[in-house]
Amino acid sequence: MTNSNVEKTNTDLSSDQAWPWWPLLPLYPYGRRRTLFKELIRDQVWSLEQLQGLYYVAVPVRLTVVKVDGGLMLFNPLPPTRELLRELDNLQEKHGPVLSIVLPTASGLEHKISLPALTRSFPKAEVWVCPGQWSFPISLPLSWLGIPRRRTRILLEDGVPHKESCEWLPLGPLDIGLGRFQEVACFHTNSKSLLVTDALVGIESQPPALFDLDPTPLLFHARERGDQPLVDSVSARRKGWARLVLFASFLKPANLSIPSIPEILRNSFKPGLRNSRSHFGLYPFSWQKGWEDSAKELIGERTPLLQVAPVLERLVFPRAKEVLIQWFDELISIKRMKWLISAHHSAPIRFTPNQVRDLKSKLLKRPWADSKGNWGFLDGVDKRLLKRGVVPQDPLKSFRD
Ligand SMILES: [Fe+2]
Image 1: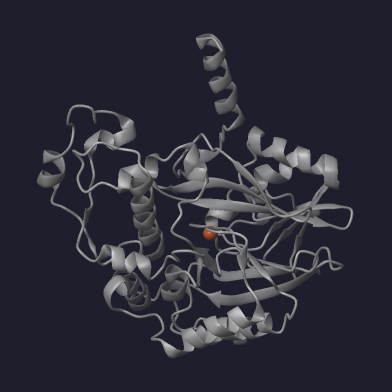
Image 2 (image 1 turned 120 degrees about the vertical axis):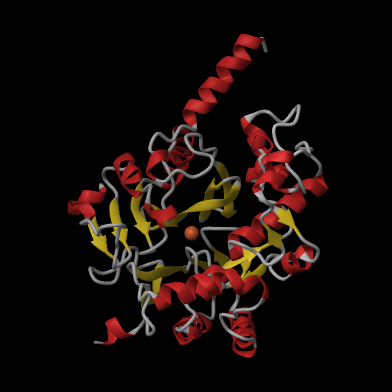
């Protein structure tokens, strides 16, 4: 291939991955979203993943495509780049048209933001959204947010889609001050899979395949100082991934300190690192001894470790553990359940009623919404919001009254 052909192919690819609406929620990798397509369960469930994050703290976000009677259901929206739409076209050719688009969360901004654009790509699809949608700083009606009111229905309030093959299981609602937390999980009977958004995740030590396309975020965080080059190796990728998991789980893990500004500047702008990829050597992190042990508590070595994400436990459910436990009890009653497919991290992961029972008993035995160690930062956020009256002491009160 000639150089001009290589250039042309790269240009075509980057325009296929373009996401012009990125300034609405300016997350890495901004205007260019690569998409990774995978078949998760043969002829039944597929995954489309893109990276989203801040300052190279990027984790994959998944749109799940499910075979339903007469066509396909899209669960958890993603930006409809040309690359993503091409994969969906291939599936439509074989399995029928996209019949419905489901936004199953009330609060997950990273899942909501692309719904309007995705609905425009499928003008005939029904749109279903979780009850209690809200926007910040002011709450706007759905149509003002670009969601087509005429073909949009509210899950549970207006019924549910695809009753013949899906069972819908709400978690929440909870009052989280700015709005509500709720997500509606879907048990897809043909694939024996539970589809969720943020409620549960399974994390493994192998970095997600999406980083194979560009491992920069992993290599950036695998370093100790800003004057170190970004060097690619299997161990650097795994180290970077473990640190990203800690960031995404605790926002500021206990074993992470922020160096002083003079120290950050001393290690920056070194030769070979004066480029935007290395953030010009600016690296405001200093990892302390013991961070690996913290990561091991979140990451399964051989199989994904099933868990309630710490951010969810400490900021959404700190005073409402019983709501989560009740939801687990509903899941335990689904005898045929075999797989979990969430919007983040590994999928599908083994998920039987016995595994839910084990998780429930572990959560009941250990301290809930802890304030020590890695939980310290999230605990501080929750306490400040509580003190200022931003979040209520009783998150269920407004739904009881
Ligand atoms: Fe999410």
